[in-house]
Image (cartoon, rainbow, N blue to C red; front, side):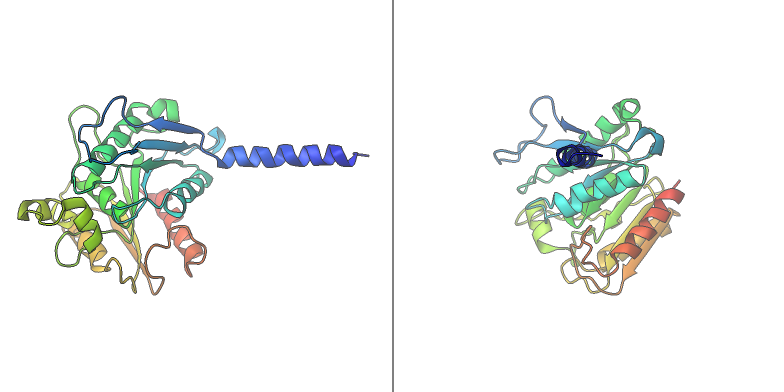
Length: 278
């Protein structure tokens, strides 16, 4: 018969094992030196937090995750860590990108996201990832960043083009239907017409843009659903595979919160899409 202290020890070991499995396996500093552009903010340390599935369950897919926050902050938990943990459960490597805030320096987040894509491709074998199965996900302003990476990618050297994108209630346009705070924080007080056009990602879609799934709520008053429909329509005009689910209610910013009425259905639909994405 086990002694009480023996049972306690076994339980603690099991709990520790579970904790280790759920915790980040690796944290990587994004830049060896200073990033290309200074955003004028202190204590900005862009990094990747990598969550890897068990080898026996690994599908070879990976997703770089861009949390939202209006380009003024980062929702690293329910739009970051929890997403990565769910992906791991699907056999997918989840990689949370802690990107620098723009502080009205428009290229700063994109520089970090491009560098994240480069890192994952260059270390694909080490990470147990297939080079042609690396996607990007983004929430709200992070969705704008993810769609920017999907439409503004580098092809020289290591490609920064995602193989697919997952966009949760994304900011897409910088025109009339935009999210004002995201636009201000990214482009500044008086953006040029060129910058507004360039970062209106529905206008940057072409035949090489990766396939996408968009997930949002019909009653979102913070980032209007038309942002998603503009991007979806642009993808379809260019014969790009696109899927969009608009839930009847839920507002904005639900991420992985199980208080979202359609949380389970949303994850089921996303899981099916990820299994079918080419």
